[in-house]
Amino acid sequence: MERHRANPTSRLLAEIPGVGPITATTMAITVDPNNFESGRHFAAWLGLTPREHSTGGKQRLGKISKAGNERLRQLLVVGATAVIRYARPGSRSASGWLLQLLERKPRKLAAVALANKMARIIWAMMARGEAYRRQPTAA
Picture 1: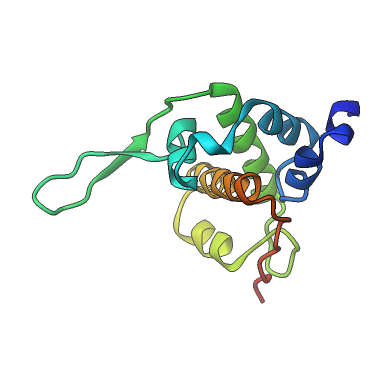
Picture 2 (picture 1 turned 135 degrees about the horizontal axis):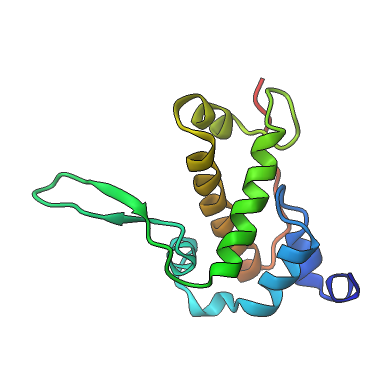
């Protein structure tokens, strides 16, 4: 907790739903956002993007690649699972996107998709030094 409180980037990242002090500190210490062109490249480095098996203009996405740092990926997926556990219409952590995703897809798949989104948000916040902007809640 002392490291978390001493690191301004870590305190900034902890504002994201599903990102606690351990995840925030680990990300702040481990990741240099300047090594990645975009949040998508960062999420792919973590192994949170699906493998592509596309041909002839038809896009086919497979399972997540599981490349990259397993510890960081695990922390994000566990945090996303915690957010999904309490996702209800009107709750602070539930966006309309997440609620619609949970209607269509299994919870574990939604957790990986949310972890991917969290990784992109983390990259953007670290690269730009911005605070987290909460999305409007679903009605």
